[in-house]
Image: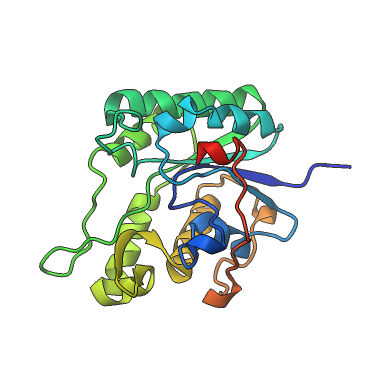
Length: 243
C-alpha cells in the first residue's frame, strides 16, 4: 500500500503536541492538519524545552530520521531554547545552531526526504508604541543563511508571525497566547494562536513550493478554536523518562 503524504515536525514546545493535562496550551503542529488535505499525515516529534542541540543529543533526531521515508517532508523549527543559558540547550547562532540545522538537512536528504527550515515563531512582544518586536536575535538570520547555502526551502515564520502579531495588536494577541487566569505567557499558544501560526506555516509551504499543492487544504478556512482537541496522553518516542 502506498505511503500517505507525510510531514514530520522537529522542534520545540511552540509546535509540540500537548495532552489534556497541558490544555489549553496548544502547539501549532496540532492545528496544522486543519490546512492540509485529509490524506496527509502529520508526525509531530517536536518536544517542549528542546533546542536544536538537545534534540540531537537526546537521540530525538535519530528517531525522526529512522521514521523518514523517501518523499517525506521534514519541517525543522528551533530558536527559543537555543537562546537559553542552560548549557544542554544553548547554541551560538552562527556556530552550533547552524551545525545542528545542517545535521537535520543532511540526515533528511540522505534518506530521500525533503527538509524545510522554519524560522522560530515570534513571541508576543510590543514596544511602547504598540509595534511588535522580534525577540530571537540572530537566530532567524542564521537559519536563513543555512537555507540559502544549502538550497533548502525556508518558511520565514519569524517575519510572518511578527507581521501577524502587529496586525492584531497588544490586546488581541492575548487571545492567541496563554493569557489565562493568572498566567501571562507570551511564548506559548492557546488554540487561537496555534491556528494562526499553523495557517502561516501552511501558506508559507505553498508560497515556497515546499510541498505539492495537492497536500494542502483550504488555507483560508475558518477554524473554530473548539476543533482543537488534546489526547489523554502525548507519547514521547523516547519514553516518559525523557520528558
